[in-house]
Length: 452
Ligand code: UGA
Image 1 (spheres, rainbow, N blue to C red):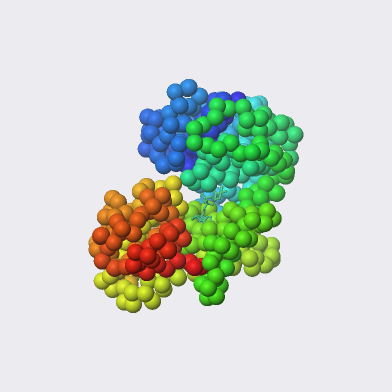
Image 2: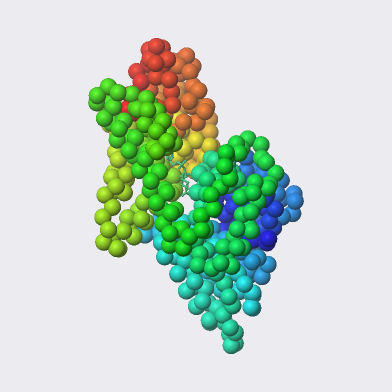
């Protein structure tokens, strides 16, 4: 099939490359000239493990090209994925202006009497499929002349990609959710995803085939839209839950790692997303929980679990600073090594990264910060006390304490012998529970970690 992908941000690029790899011809549409030029010159504007090689591979087949023109994609593609951003407004409600903008352009460029499927992949509020239909119809209706409105369908197809494991999640998803009211759209979408459902694509190095093919979940658009929000809210709630248990463990002398193992062995609970630490960050969880709370508020529903999920997560960040204060007393003039800045390993993304919130607070308290991250894209503020260093050991030089904020392998594999040679102090705050605390203690370090 020939497929259009409107918006070449993170989701759009991964979607385009994935669809091209499983055999489709893909037209990626990007409005931002620099990003478009980079993509046309075979340069990826983001870091994601394995994506570069795959991108080069599919570009070489000629099945993936990029343009700025929505009308061109409308002419050539039967299925068009909308992958533009939906940033939160101040009240937590997602801002749909980018979605509306591209929808209106798609309506204006709609080829006469063609059938098109508009697929919402951006995380959009429940009910957006109706908006999308309305915007499209308004545009089609306002075309000059007495043209009939062509037949089109709107589909909600939420994505469940994790940054850092996006290729694994693209090729071996647990489920594919399609929300629509049209049998024709269901049939076309099933055809589009058939290579994933049947596992008919060239296997990729470094990916682990999942034991079962993805579940095909066919539903109405509202349920599909809510599935996306509910999934992210549940995952965030699971992390906040284990972090609440970590707080209790600290007080009573239990070990949260063992507690997580013990509860995760129950298949009804599952062991994933029970890693305690400084909590979740990234562009999705907070935004989606706020959007869901806003929706619930509009409909007079109480959302106590959602509120508690957010509150526990905030508290974890504050706790890192409180621990440093209680161990080092005054932070003014102290040198602190912050190891890891991205919101999780294997990504360069720093949106809502716990590390940046903690660093800001430490700078306000007068500390000097030396940060290291192997990939993170972050601008160091003009405050001269915040330096980015090229290696973890460089960042540790002269530090009174080290704070592990992201469990990159180069950080988790640091040895106490190496750290001892360069640090001034002996305090390690492992905010991701990724170091072997006993070994570090045996080398004379004081180790503080969540739930231990
Ligand atoms: C999340 C979801 O996992 C995806 O399914 C979804 O598609 C995506 O949001 C989205 O809506 O776009 P992502 O934000 O990339 O994916 O990353 P996760 O792997 O879910 O991690 C989120 C945060 O939780 C990270 O800061 C991570 O360090 C933290 N985390 C994760 C924990 O603190 N403990 C855990 O046990 C797991």
